[in-house]
Image 1 (spheres, rainbow, N blue to C red):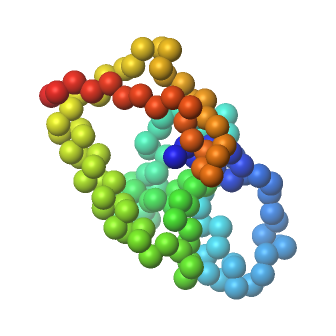
Image 2 (image 1 turned 60 degrees about the vertical axis):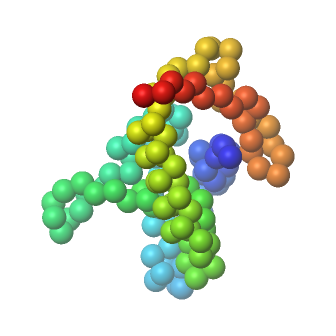
Length: 130
């Protein structure tokens, strides 16, 4: 599922924190960060590294960007941790077992269509046994 569009790749609109209620502000509301909209489509894994004041080092923070895929707070997805674990296992098995190679230009596209989800029109991966 592609995550392009308002609220994911860019904010749909800004909301001033003065307009938000006290409960939102006390519950650490708005803790997700913002990314530069000019470079948001570039692959940059360091976006999720934030400065940890306690250790004076960089650490991974899943909420460093504008996207919270499973929601947050008491109504967030209770299967989130299982889904993250399954994704980690799948990615590790793919990286260990295959060599990812570039696909021909005619198959490489970011074009997508809106259905129930925002789905890619073409989705190809070229694998070679490692």
